[in-house]
Image 1 (cartoon, one colour):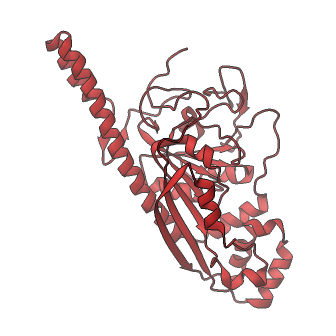
Image 2 (tube, helix red, strand yellow):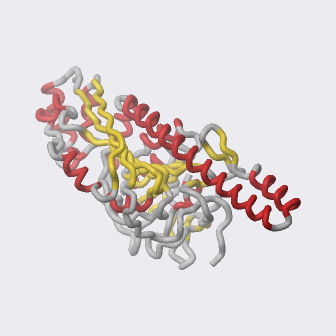
Image 3 (cartoon, rainbow, N blue to C red):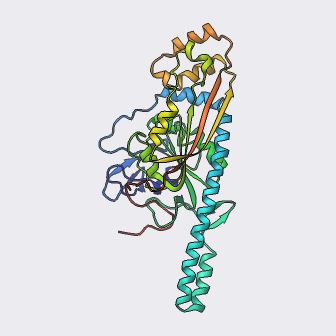
Length: 368
């Protein structure tokens, strides 16, 4: 639901925080944005305009293909790997914050009225947030527009930003493996956003052009996820915490090699890895790289959905693709899907240009 992550979002016009109202959200400057009945929020500056997102047919094809379980192994491996990143990052970050807060309270107690203030500091240090199994638990979700000190959390939960989230398939799988996390699904397609908004209760779906500025607070995300989506390195770096991670999934040149030619699929550039490194240079440094191949068993309908859910759908029509499938694979095919998963850390010392208010950290908002 959008209210789960509203505190981490900003007005795309003036970059101030947002507050929920009946059927819409607004900022202190009076800019307001309607909340769609389907549960997603479109955040674009200026007059409303059509975003360059996937069509209804593409989204239906993707939902059918993913729903059939063909990429479940990729989603599960990704979820397991990234849930470990979230748990490890949160455990270390939370321990440091709790230690610092308690140390500060104790220091103040020892210098002023030791007997009473020391007891008060110890009591304060033992209540409120509580670390349990690598997560932080609060009494409940924070309200929209809140902010205070801390590290990239909503009510103690790490935030995952999925750029180009589509239907929210991969983000939802990750959140099921990371019960303390909240997710922001970012996409340009309203058809995809309708599905992402209901993919998981801890997903808030927002519509915006992922190639431009993101209406998300600076340094708010513990993890930024990009699965087969455009990459805006500067914005990904900005919204990511200094101790956060960026995970990118891309197809290799071997991806679906058995059917690329006959079905006229868009091919993977042989220099894709080189171009990705160049785009991330100066913003991120690679920490890990995983390779994964999946042997698929696809019916003719599965093959059609596979083709029509991706970029090839912008160039070919379904009837001609179906005809090609019936000519070559009337009983289906067994192509190999091939992926690379890269984990990156933000480059230390890279200048972050803050947009909007500071990242939300839980607690009450200070009035200005």
